[in-house]
Image (cartoon, rainbow over all chains, first blue to last red; front, side, top):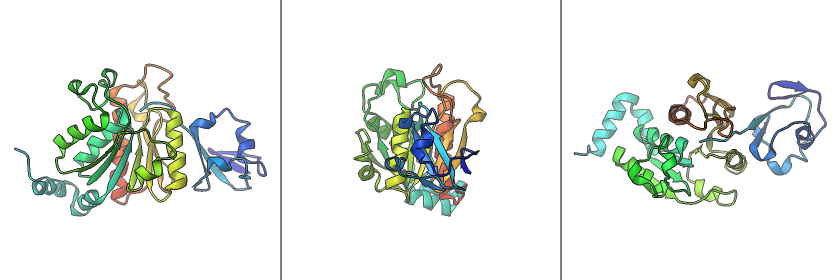
Amino acid sequence: MVKINGENLDIAGKTVTQYLETTTYNLQRIAIERNGDIVPKTQYSETILEDGDVLEVVSFVGGG
Amino acid sequence: MIPTREEMKATLVLRQGKELTEKCESVTVAICGLGGLGSNIAIALARAGIGKLILIDFDKVDVTNLHRQQYKASQVGMHKTEALRDNLLEIAPYIQLETHTLKLTEENLTDVLQEADIICEAFDKAEEKAMLVNTVLEKLSQKYLIAASGMAGLASANSIKTRQITKHFYLCGDESSDVADGMGLVAPRVMLCAAHQAHMVLRILAGKEE
């Protein structure tokens, strides 16, 4: 299981990009943290999610 | 009559103690974007005795900014970097200020922010926020970063929060109220979010990192 934003998902073995394709996130507005570290945008397609990973997708909204 | 540096420091020491006051004095905080968030963060930190601020914005003060940003009607048309510098020096005459009138990009960001210990993200656009957060966490990962997302409209003041995402990355706001959705930004709620960001700076300096 991979925990993303508190939700357990059965997606170990998939890449970050493959996960994002199942969501509605605007890729220009997000940052992804995996087990305490940022996942560089250039590595979304190469980063394979592993069993036990904890991720957080931070999705920004406008205003400031 | 402007108080001396020593008088101003003495009053801070009385309130927040010698240790925190001297930490504040020795730290450099960068503020990226000088709008409703950034101008309010800067004023709070200048009052708290932060030694040096790096102020970054490409824009000029516009009449539409005056309802929430810490500028005066007489400053419309000035670069925000210069207007805020003038305002801060009236409040805290001994603070060190470095201004950059430019647009931060992935390319120039590491150079401009190199000397900062703590970075406050205070942009307006979601895409720019994400760009700054991704670039800082990737390339300047030893620095503290305090970003903001979600502070528009008239939802409850109590929904604005500070959340620690990673060891050095904090996010303030309600994470959902988008400026594009409703009435836009109102001064008190933007100030609340800016206050969360400025307060987190002080908490980090006081060793209260969570």
